[in-house]
Length: 408
Image 1 (spheres, rainbow, N blue to C red):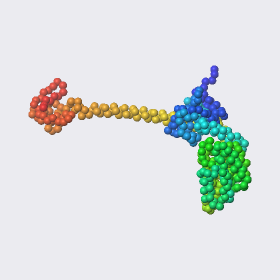
Image 2: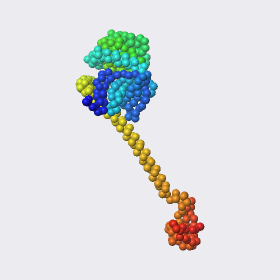
Image 3: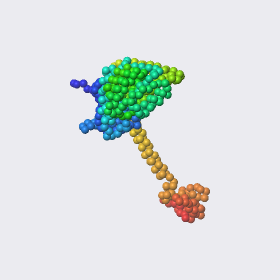
């Protein structure tokens, strides 16, 4: 007889197959967004579809930095991430790490392919990085001659060192001829013998920054004998030039601060300590990353990250169930309250009076409930719904049921 397995064992086996599949661990899928839902927890659930298929997707709150726009149904996107199994339900889905609109997504795929190629060639290796010299006298700048980037570099550089000489190569940074102009600028300034070079421009879309993702520009930066600081776009923009450069600055302003030392004594001392601390931390991180990669290979089969996703999904399900249970409890309590309200209305004396009943009392304000309590001629007060009736007893009679009082 063949072996019999539990549902959990089968789901776990399938999950391990997905985990060990290199192709599924880092994949880019394009399609149209549908059933997009932003959960209160910060997670995003959606489906990706094309003409003949659909795949369920989720982007957890911790990966939201990989989404630079507000995604909605109908968007054509490229989703990067991994395909894995949600073990509890036995369903596979795409765990998104980054999402881009399809037009930009094609360029992004080219960017990733070139980045991988140059990285494998060693052009990003730390041992080829040149240190930025201290107290430079001449600073070369390759950027557009107009715009905020060059003005920021000038203003900050001269504020930190008014004796600095800045040599600007007015380059095209966007459109046709941009890559050739940037390469020529790097080569010219390198030949002049400046102390450091800043290569960059202001922010923009991936299309606007594409010249800095070109292989010719990357090789010009790598082959330059002068230390180069890249300053392309805003802090969130990252280009191939940033990886090849000796130092990457998040903005042109930051590049000027990194290239030009402040001449004031105290600030210079603090800046030096900061650089030493930063460099030491970077080296330590690089060392720990190397050890982490070794441990990651050993733990790949167990996939702790996948287990965390599993528990996180389970927590979301329990949260939804708890909310539904609370809603049902509140609804049940409201129904019980309405029942008690109706019961109290039935016991209300005013309701009895409104239904034609009355309340009779004698001159001593005692309730009269029997003919034996009154005598002819005695004065009585009758309470009705809208007031009181004062009367006197003419006579009394005993009835077969209850007690009757005749008065006016």
